[in-house]
Length: 448
Image (cartoon, rainbow, N blue to C red):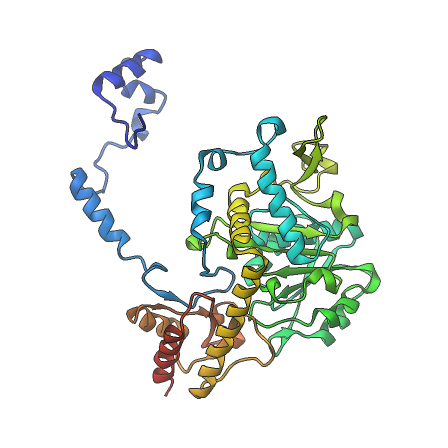
């Protein structure tokens, strides 16, 4: 029988104490000096009955503004997307959600195949040769990519665009500090990386240039123009990309990227208060042995049947520390499986259609804001986000939107002081015309 709650009787407690050779629970604390033990009453509410406790907790939970009850226009790296119902069904199977590391391939074929399919689909989306079995999240993947570039080129300077997600930049700086790597931020102009300033910072000591595509402001960076600049002096081009956008945009691999990273949250992974998610990491074939984490490969057994194995594990658990490519000792196999199931359910046509809807609906919203007399911060093409200027603090606007059943956009003033009172609005395929029109009306009425 399965039990969600296992009670402990006085008899159970007595048996456990007897098994470890003590007479009472107080004996377990004998080593703690009497004078430092807490003697008073804890400042907590009295215990409630089971029914009363459930009622209180349900009331607290009901205060949350979830995405089922509220239309969300909040993005900035985590997005509200359609998740095929089959995703939850597959990842809830015990053979997947209890699996950890597939060290024994003979009994882990299902898990290994799921990871292999994830790698394959990431390569198809990014246009790269090799992808690993996943990373913790997009920010971790970006920082690991910078460390790979620094190690491969033996250079100690990383140039990162201002238009890269600020949280990812924070992770990058944390990684870089321990490796004594200098991180220089290249300012943005009109919402995209300033190529003149980028070229000015290029030199023989630059290991890599990091660009986001689409970038944090929703703008499409001109990778074709950036590529020759980024590869000056044998430096590398790292592109952080929303994989859903690659259903319609030219893959970074086709535009000269050496490493492509990002977060697969957009495929079958809930927003979940910001995590856990699933980072992806893809490279050209020449960098295959420098990839952090692990790679799953396809092979055949002695009877010619298809099988899967852990092909490469260049991490410090398996090889000498000085030869390890990363100290990350795990991957996000369950979330990678969710992404794989979602991509499989959608198919190539479905991913493209989903991307097209993001593009069209975001541009519809952008034009509606313009018609309402509100300023759009930047020119140029966007994917599913754009910045709009308000005549009031974004925090106040979002508080009022919540009252109307909507979750507003990200306050760009939090991370970009020059964009005070600017809201980053995300419009995904789940947003309806009515919801978009209502958002514009709510913000437009208060703009007048």
